[in-house]
Image (cartoon, rainbow, N blue to C red):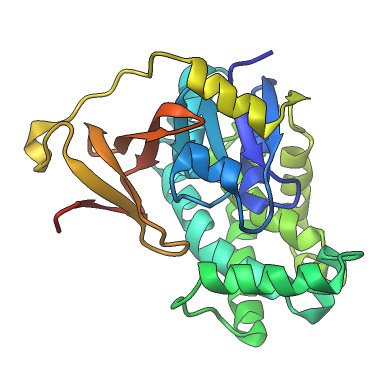
Length: 309
């Protein structure tokens, strides 16, 4: 099986984005199912305090955030590409918008009472209380739209996306699928999981047909793996992917730093800086079970600070 290990859970929208990319590339991968809510001791053994789902593991290298995960998958398996030359720039811009603005409208819209009842059908009341508390802690300080505001904004966003397909193109940026398609698909996929509220999609026939094309890529071929096995694998590896520090960016090698998401789940991850570019941050940290790991973050969406600051 592949050396790529995806740590995820079935109902995670961002995980679905990555699963579809793996399916598009017809890849083999290993699957570690992580808890939906804290505590997540096996997750934190690999990532530090980073608690978001999903993350990608390759040996003792841990890649956080789906923007970076998709880049790493592309590097390891470049064909078929998710960055076609015909969509250069545009696909990344749409993907960034979909991962932020679209996502944070689609989720509160879907989790209105009628939608939440279907998303969490069969879940015990104790879990619902724990889930609500967990997500409240993750999004503390964030302003999220009301159901009415989310519905209005989502309708506009869906109309924009549908209009992109007016010329008969198969995918959002043209004849070839790109990272934009997978970033948008995660939110449409989540809405469709709640039929009681999914009627908002019905007026957009072109977008619905587009989603069926993307969804048909599936998830590739995967093999289950336990979190204990993934931690043992990380500890057994004595090497990491090569990284370096751009000296023009104001940081030095082995400097103590923290990396913190700037939007939600703002739990700082601390370690020694071993890699830094305009695109990526890499810190080294040690865990008693996982050994020495390199945790990688995209530069966009994360705050890098020197520990003494």
